[in-house]
Length: 151
Image 1 (cartoon, rainbow, N blue to C red):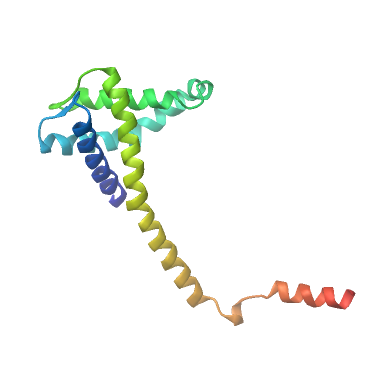
Image 2 (cartoon, rainbow, N blue to C red):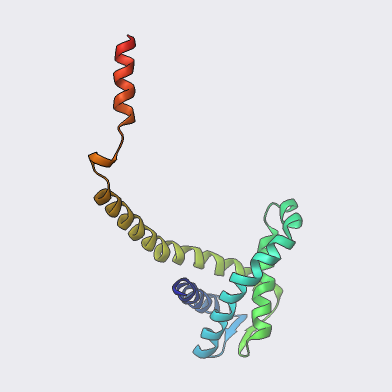
């Protein structure tokens, strides 16, 4: 649930930025922005993986470029579901989806990676506390002793 909220907030920020960059993408109110971000997050979590698996052969032959079209079609799908969210035409949706992906990746890098670093730090600190010389087998030391005997 926490990840869904984070993803939705990132999508909300990205949609706000994209609507400011492209004149052809209009979000009528902040309520529409919230609903659009929730719908986009749900579509990206549940529908997009299924579509990518179905379109895998086409995506393979286009070397992954068809994913850009999938993102544009999903953005148009969000437009058809949410009242007050308008996209002028397909080219606006295409470039808007590219910009949305770029903004999402940049924001995700700064938000989610910090959580991963915190988790890694917590795991390493807890593993240092549980490991001591009594419950660790020193394999390298024994191997070096055997090598010295053979020489």
